Structures are given as structure tokens and as C-alpha cells.
Image (cartoon, rainbow, N blue to C red; front, side, top):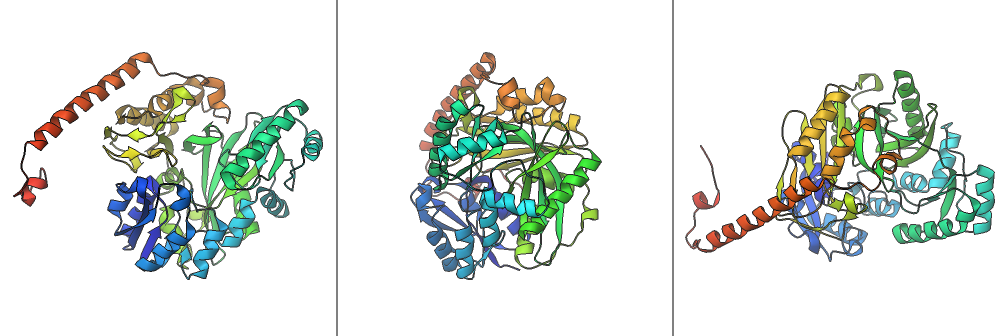
Length: 495
């Protein structure tokens, strides 16, 4: 087993990985940039190494600096979390060259599955159903137009080298093709350094359903049931749940076996997620494989009682899975809401800035994977996720009610968050009925604005907190700490 792991990430996911490492008796190393010099993950880790300026290219995307940090601190493995270098085949390859274990799939697998058209070919050979579309990327507008006519409108232009909705455009007719193609190429180039795009048939009103997989180095592969991830904004998930409201035992069996087949066909090792689109007739199609830990992994942990990060670490150390498919049973219902620093009333525009006050919800069946604290400055350089709020209950109705109650307790002052928006989504009739499709927000919440009374209360609370803060600072400035003792600085305590 590893003695020390460097976590090549930041925020709540870095803290999440470190939590399991502590339970396993493994020392941790944090890395940080200028923007994260006071970040929580740097305080929790056993060691912290400064990488450089706030720009990701100078810090969290700088492979050489991260590997040097691992070597200097004696870390024998690197956990990449999600985002940044987590799906970078070159990084995995560089770790291997430096005799550092990359906690994730082999570099070749990451490369193969990261190329969306190559991944489609692998799935077809593995007898996994794929959406009708192109098998090779293309850069010629005329050829793309011909392919679109062959596939049939509406079609979806997608970046061949990435995901997360970047470089993606829905095209309804030939007249829209040229402009959409140019926009998709430009966005793909900016996001992934690669402007290659391809076409797929666009499915109307699909559900986004994914299966968590675990595969060890001994040939054992299992799935940990499904997650429904259809509530999305700009093709990025904001609410996830398990089990899916659309699932039947027969469909779960079929899709789960398809996910295992996809993993086997690609030579997969470690934790990953096979994503499908499920149409209204119950047909499903392979979408992609995310070769990393997913943001939404906690809901799977809640219903299966399996620590996925622990499994990642054990698999990377060469240990076999200690359970089989028949041992995996889902109990109850779990929901996750992503809490971002963003303004849903302004097209989900990022809302960086100082968190003047935060109060996290607590109670039975509530988990909050949080990476910030009162006074922390949410930087503008990175994805503005603050936390992941997860609830678990006996059934879906109770889970929805518990999540609404937990969100109502969640207080974040100083920046905008989607908490009021999420509460409205969960309370809506379509969501309550389980009618969750990928066009849900566009259909039911286009142009959403927060209730003015709630907004006024939030502003008032913020002003009161600011005034109280000024008084606290004045009081603290009048106190001398020249001869302070631990009893004065520790705060309230008891024997």
C-alpha cells in the first residue's frame, strides 16, 4: 500500500480524497497556486507545495511541477481528482516514466477513450450500441454538411477531444451548419487545444444515465448501479440522483452489462463512468466514458456503502476487488446538488468573490463535501464549485423532501449561488414526477429569477453580517495578544 499520495487538485475534491487517505493511514501532499494560498485543502494535508501563479497553466495543469512536487515530498502515487489533469494521457504516462503511480486508468486507455470517435469504434467492436454518427473527426464544412444529411437533422456537433459541453452545438437545418461548425471548432480549440469535431444524431428528450464501474488489474469488473444526471445547464450536470426514476430491474441489468462490456472492450482499469443516453422508448446508446472519479460519485457511495476513492487507491496498489456483482445492492435513494458560485438569474454566470459567511446544513442522511469557509475568496480562475450537497433517504419522495429542507438551511453570503434555483427545481411538479430529461431547465426554468422577497432577505442578511464583522474587528483590534496563552486562543473548550 502507498505511504504518501499527492492530490493534484484543489477544493472539495482534494479534501474528499484526503479524507479517505487519512482513514487508510496514508499521508497526503497538497499542491496550490497563488489564488489558493489560503485554501482549505492546503491546511488539511500533511504537506503543501506551492506550484506557481493562479493561471492553471502555471499551476494545476503544469505536469512537470506536479511530478517534481511528488518526487521532492516522497509521494509514491498521485490522485488527480477530476478536471485539470485527471483525463490527460500524457500526464499518466509521465507519472509512469517517473515511477509514480497514477491513480486512474492506464495512459493508453485514457487516450483511446478521450478521443470520442475512437471510443465509438471501440464500443462498436464490443457490441455496445452507439448513437448514429461519424466515426472520424472532420475539419471540412462541406463534408460535415454531407454527413449531416446522411445522419439526418437534427444533429449534434461535438468536440472529439473533450467533454463537459465544450465545443457542442445542436443544428436543426443545413442553413445553420456553417456557423455552428465554426463556433464549435473555435470553442473546442480554446477548451482542449484541439479543434477536431464530429457529428452525432441529436436525440430529442433523452435522459442522461450513467453507470459507475470498477475494474481491477486481475480482470474483475463490476458496476455500482446507475445515476440519473439529466438536470443540466449548458450540458453540465447540477442535480444527480440514484436510482434513476426511469429504471426498471430489466433495464438496469441490460445497461449494467453494457457498461461492463464497454469497460472490458477498452481494457479499463480503476474507477470510471460509462455514460448513456436513454430515449423515451427505453433504447439506450453509448455516449462516452469518463476516465476518472465523477463529481457525483457520492450518491453511489450513499446507496451502496462503497467508498469509491478507497477502491481507486486499492486497485492502483494492485489489490483485487473484494466483492462481486451479486454483492452490490442499492439501498434507498440519494440526490446530489452542486453548489456553485454562480448566478442562475444571469444565465449561470460565475460569481467569484469573498464568502462573508457560510452555514452548512446538518441532520440525518445529509452529507456536504465542502471546500470553502467563511472569509474564503472564491477565485475567478477555476471552476466555481463550492460544495456538493448530498442526501440519502428511504425512497425518492423522502430524499427530495430532505434535500429541499437541507438547501433551506444552507446559508452562503457574499456571493451568488444556485441554492434558491435548486429548491425551485426540486419542488417543481415535473421533477417530483420524475420527468427529468436533458432539456428540463430550458423547458421549465428558462429565464428563471429568484423571488424578490427572498433576494431582499439575503441582501439584508449580508448587510447585517458585514456590520457585525466590522464591530468584531473593532473589538478584536482593542485587545492585546502580546502575552496570549493557548487557553485564550483555542476558544470554547471542555475537559
